[in-house]
Length: 94
Image (cartoon, rainbow, N blue to C red; front, side, top):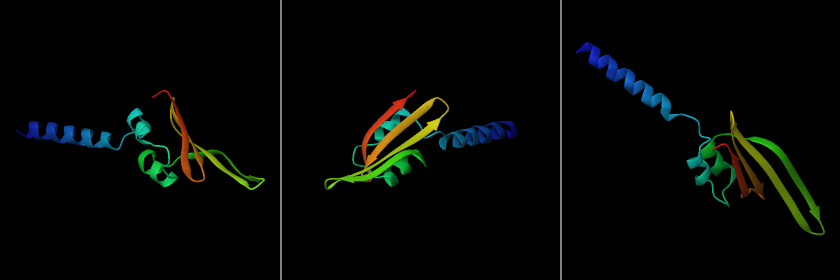
């Protein structure tokens, strides 16, 4: 009986260890929608890395762009924010 309990405990530990896995998945990528804020995206994907940003004004038109990347090995999610909201997204390897 002790052997069965040990196996059950080990199985549960492995299951729970996998629950916190990699957030860079196709399902999470699909969950990110145009118009979301960076905080909303990071609640799905975790913290990202800023790759580039631009903040300028031309003739009264303001440009505020930021490109963020989430990567785990060969899986990459790239999201462009305009004025703090998701404007475009792309992925590689999902």
